[in-house]
Image (cartoon, rainbow over all chains, first blue to last red; front, side):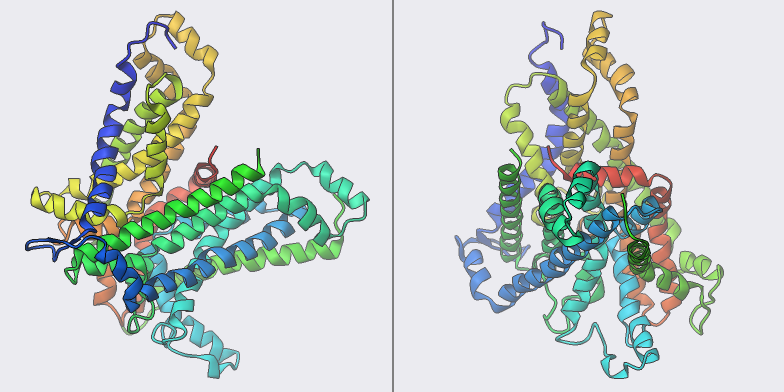
Length: 290
Length: 266
């Protein structure tokens, strides 16, 4: 740029962004940390309790469970979509199929639909007289029908499946983009060497898309940890507390139960977890790709 | 590349099967809405009834207002900040820019609690600002990152020529760089629009009395009131999803590129 650039000029351009970002994101984040050290019901006086709210995260069974449920959701939001996505992308990348553009548009669609809408649609599928039970009855699997969102064992996996539905398309599209980068000649060469589809996948495709896998995992794990709307609309944490998750506990405690300190301690822990996952994944990618 | 005929057939089978899995819940919802029942008229009439009963004209307008404000402010601020980070020497950018990347990761849950109580103290809850400002801040984190990447890759000779012509940094930005970078800006506008339209937690918390109830919240409320009327509820759900889905169908390249490229950091 111009040599005689005035020193303050960049800051004038940065001003609005810094002000808004600082005031409505960084500042409240710092306030969350501050809140988490207090016991406060949201109305009266607050008392300083040090790290008690964090200690409760480990001691209180319901909170331990909430984080445990989030872990289960990671299986459904991240691990399962990655497995399906890898298979799907490998198959599609290997064969020259037509209509890939249309396919991308279709499988990506769940990503752009509001989670509340997704939750409402799946509630109807899981309802006692809903689509899933109707289909099961029609194919003679009557004994498998149940109240999918009212069952202590099956509700969490049922909610998780919604996550699988939402995330698989994103993961597949990401992986396909990664695979498209790999030169076709390498595949031709591998085939001339007599490599089968499986060996081709493990020795050629997989190593070249490590970065995309890392990104896909980060996005989906974070989405699993942040899950709120889905639980709020489908189950409200129930039956009992069998599907409550950290983000739902934040909301309940801060705005329904008057335990603001505890709510922010959960929120801060969640944020630290998200930072840590990003850090670990980025380190890994940096190491792989110099 | 040589692929056997059987393998090709299998590939198409996988393709169709998976596309069906992705579409099934959407088809079920549409089918539920269109089928008449004792509690719902079905056909296209069901959408009219859901629209009226759920007062969606009001809530869609709220959503549109919030989205317009968030998109305008966030995109403008992001262009300016991305311009500074991408083309100028900013002292302190070594720690300032990572701060924005950090913001990219902060979940709404981590800011919404103090935001609510602090804005309530200021008497600002239940206003447009309480709903819009936190979302503007979130979008600026991504927008600055996104626009910086564009400005860094912008052709230097064009910028140098503008300077030689005597254009200041302001004119270079608005009359040269932004017009060339329209695709990047359009992608950003679309993503911010989608995120804002679909956001749930922030409007839920920041407008407790429902003055600024956005369409997704109205749908959650509608769900509570129409537990038995599945057709009506499905119709309402379709209505809420429709604006983003329609835009997506026309400009899907932008959405996919933005979400894929935006995620794959440099």
